[in-house]
Image (tube, rainbow, N blue to C red):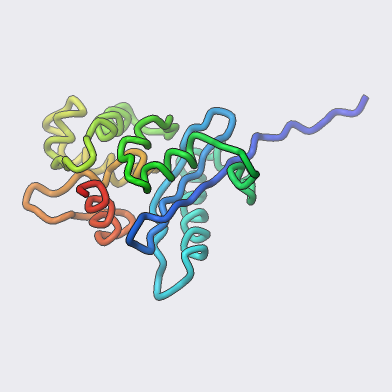
Length: 198
């Protein structure tokens, strides 16, 4: 009897427009457990179509997954998202659409699977507890993560976050004011904060 090759389950992706902007919130997820494996904000550059920005972001997310979670990155990406079938629903696309539509707690219901140190896991859990429209400082994030003196490490956890928007590192701002740094640019961070402040 011939042996059949073992295939890794495919990954899926979804993208939704952030209202009033040209930004696309994009996520890569595993359909067998509906866990977000990577996510971010697709920002069009120099007038490129949003589809091109999403494609570029998906490549970047897969590169980051290759570095941080090679077993997940080895899975094939299904080019036809499951939600494209008539009548099909999936928690990840549904939650992203609800968030863009104004249900700011919709992403809180999603599972996230990303590798990281014990402190980073604590910081990411703390980030998920930061309410929309109520940003915290890096000092406050460190305290919420259980290590008040680890302010720089809190910043490092934000920088290493592979599941941006779902793990809302955009809700951390400098104590001195302004929006501060963000992997997808300060304009994207400001747009997310403005969406949540409405």
